[in-house]
Length: 376
Ligand code: EPS
Image (cartoon, rainbow, N blue to C red; front, side, top):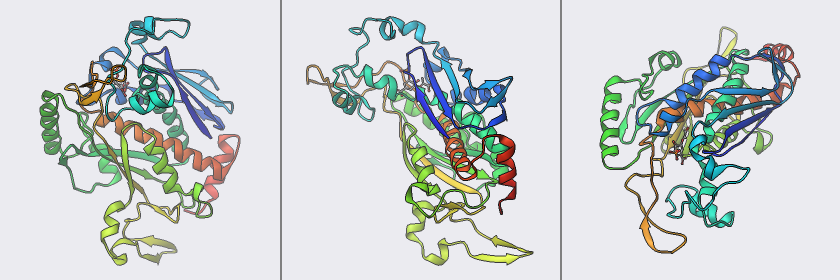
């Protein structure tokens, strides 16, 4: 299974094509749109979200709410295109307006203008923009619906916003039921503190990131493989998550903490009780030897602060080579909740791909039968 996206932030639409989905998967459109709405929500979002109201349109691959086994094509149309078509229309437009030459540190602007040989970073930023993640959420939501038919579920929450950290540990169910709508944190006091911090950062014309934790429950052992490096599940999931704009670090289980501890404090001892293998800890985060081991998958990801700062950072105008402040028209202070929704979706996409690679199968029934026969 493969997901490809296309589309510019202020273009007509953003598009995804999912190849390799089985036939017979019931598609819940309301669920996709609920995920899209969640992605638009959260404390700290900026002006663009007041313009957009993301809804998916399924263009191909689904008939009567059920997949056909053909490529599924999805579109999320950009409402803001109406305000931008004079500068963005593929059929012809004015490219001398809305140029961006005061390149933003931390964005794709400078490296992109050199690589794609242009003097207008607009040609770069339109595609590099995190707007693309709307359709990744739509595609991921379909993959998540596939995983759900196998009993695999995903959740997650925000562990920290800037320097405000929640260091408690939560169960899957506590996360699913307990995350709060403003920032997807679980501890109300911490979330209030995080909101106050966001307000201060906003007043300063600045931006901030945070840390997210993702969990996968119900995945049987043996997905991914120790046999080739490209198949290792931890490498695949980390790669997928790092492909999301602003993600700068990913750790599985204890992650970086494992480097400071001794082996006895890191590895999860194995017991055999009542006819099955049992672990009493899950420091590995559900992946050993590049394969799922049947325990919950636990991943943390670090999101950097958004690179468009209202106060602007020192930079250079690429036309004049003069020092200036980086361009800023509007920006989110943080999109940490959106990022959590996006990462769950991207995780669903990569897991679904790993599951389908192992199980094969053209229709959902075949896949469910094969999954059912696997050991836990
Ligand atoms: C983004 C810049 C902003 C964000 C955008 C990502 O858009 P604009 O330039 O139109 O204000 O709002 O994110 C989204 C539009 C979205 O839907 O998440 C960027 O440069 O990455």
